[in-house]
Image 1: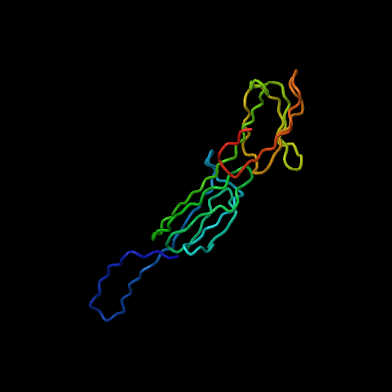
Image 2: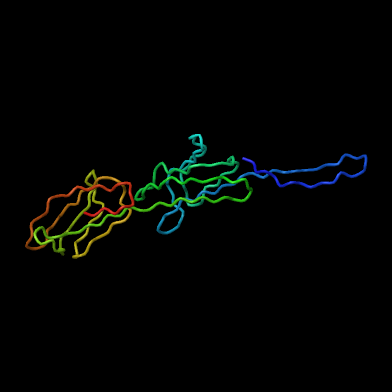
Length: 195
């Protein structure tokens, strides 16, 4: 956890007194930022770990609205791992970083993307976009997560937590019958879900 000191040049004086030479070691300092990929702001609620080259967890914490600061990490290679992402976010890929032999603050950053679901309401026969359908997205317990009336355009919903959902039509547009419920899954992936 200490940094190799700079060389100290000294001169031995021609005296009978004890002469003192001092060399001080600084410590390593690492600052970890966990941010929202779209805004760049610090993200709270991510469970993170630092793992050393031997596979041992040497630090673990939950991200807050300020970067995480660590002192005295031994010089070497580490993995920053997100164990769990905050609700509505996708778990980031591991970040490999090296703690250098320097007393400067070394910065490491990891960003989380958000989940995205795009809903299209189409006529079953023509594939034409429909207006006037009252739709809901419900979670596994039946709780309504989102409700809207289709306007002929796709609706994109961001930050829907990872899980399984049901797209439910409450009211069909005039001249159409109600569609059957459609089950879909929001995965721990930045790839958009199209329903």
